[in-house]
Every structure is written in structure tokens, then in C-alpha cells.
Length: 345
Image (cartoon, rainbow, N blue to C red; front, side):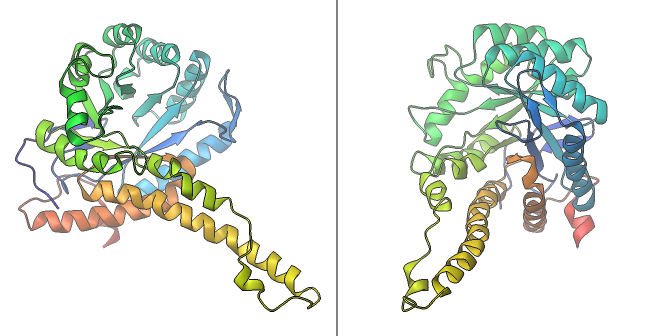
């Protein structure tokens, strides 16, 4: 574990603090909701949802956060301005405190979200996701004029996934089509609470750099740092292909030819268990990739679908306790009022 010489910034979101030296504050988790093909979304253009199911999902996150001492943000994904308004209204109607990330692949929708949270007076809870190499001038202008002062700042360099390449995106101009580095863009947009995202990339395409960049971001800049490391699992082609395989291994059927019903019974029994085993094989790296990041000092873990909260938060609590115990050997200690070590030990 680590103690950084660089002063570490801590951002406060209505009492949820993120950043600092490893061990001082529990890792913040961010759960994604209303993502593509999410079953609780009834109309993704208008933002119509099953509110009861959505609230139940978020309540479970809050219950577990209270139980284990790991705080939560929520990541709201929308692809239209109307959907953003609907989702933000829903969330702020059931939770008047927690910060939310605004995420979209549609620049105009994300720009509208900045205007909307400013108009409705909840911009202090909003986190723009993200300032990256493809950010449009229109979005910069809207963000600068809005009351939003928190953003994810992405260290993604498609031409160079090394730590050097990722740092170049953050600090130098002329990368990814932008004249300025991402941190300078963030400053010009009025962002005073940046959270650095080390840009998870697929296995074989610089995934190691995404992890090493955690150390670089904390050591060089001192800002809260993290990422959506589950994207490494999502983009792992072999694992997706293997998870979908339905073939019964031939070893299980060896010597059973001609025995009435046995082959059929074994095939049915084995495939029933196979689905569970393959799901476990998927979820293990899906959760484990985040644990690597946490051990290296990540402050924010955007772990993907909100339904994964059970596995994620228990694993995170374990890691946070280990990190704090190690940090104490380095002269650090917990500064947060709430932490898994107070509740689970």
C-alpha cells in the first residue's frame, strides 16, 4: 500500500468525502442505472421507468452502504434531454443528498443536463461525465456557464495507452484533437472538483497502463482518482464468447453411449449447473478488476450495473479494511466518521 508525498485533495459531496491518502476515507462506489437495455426502462427516449423497481434498487445500495460503511454515488445514463430531465427528477425526488454522475453518448443531451441541474438547483450534486478528448466546444461553453463544478476528467489517449500517453492527455495540448490538456479544459469549464478517470482499456490494449495511471494521478496531481474498470471484463472477447458456450464437455458423456436417457439427463443436469458456473466465472473478474484498482489507491469505482451491488460492496469493504490496516503502518489513519473497519470488525 502507499503513502503519497503529494498533498491529496478531498472533495466533499454533501458529507460524502472522496480522495485523500489511502485509508483515510472509504472508497466511493458508483452504480449505473438506466443503462442500455436496462429492464426497468420502459421508454429510453422519454425517460419512462418502473419507478418502484428503480427505487428498490437504489434503496438496496443505500441499505448496504449504511451497513458496511462504503458510500455510494449513482451514475445516471441517458441518451436524450427529455430522459435526463425525467431521471434527474426521479432521483432528486427520492434522495435529496447523494451526488449523481450525468453520463451520455449524446453530447447535446449531456449539455442539456448541465443546464437542467442549474435551473432546478441541484448542480452542486451533479458530476459531469466526462471531460475527454471528444468533448465538443458547445459542451464546454454550456458547462462553463452552468453551476456544475464537478466532473470526471478522462485520461484516455487512443494513440498511446501508456502512463506517459495518459498523462499527456491530461496535461498537454494537441492530443485527441484538443488544443488543451483535459485538466486545463476542466479548469476553463469551472470545474473545481475534478475526479481523474484513468480510462480502463481492454486486455491487450493497455489495460496495465490504466492501473499504473492510478499511482501517477495520485502522485502527480493529488486529485481523487478512479475509473470504470469493469469495462475491462465487458470488453474481454474470450470471456464473453466462453460465457455463452452451451456445449457439454465430452468427458462427461464418455462411455454412456447406448444407455437410455442417461446422456439426456446428464446433459440437462450439467448445463443447468454450467450456467451458474459460467456466471460465477464472469462475475469473479468483473468484481476482481476493481479490487486491483482499489489496492493501488483508487478513490472512485464505477462498477457498472446497479444490480451488482451485493458482490461489489462486500468485496470493497474487505479491501478497504486491508488498506486501512496497511496505511496505519505508514503513519496514516482513518479520517472518515464512517468506515467498514468500524462496522465489520
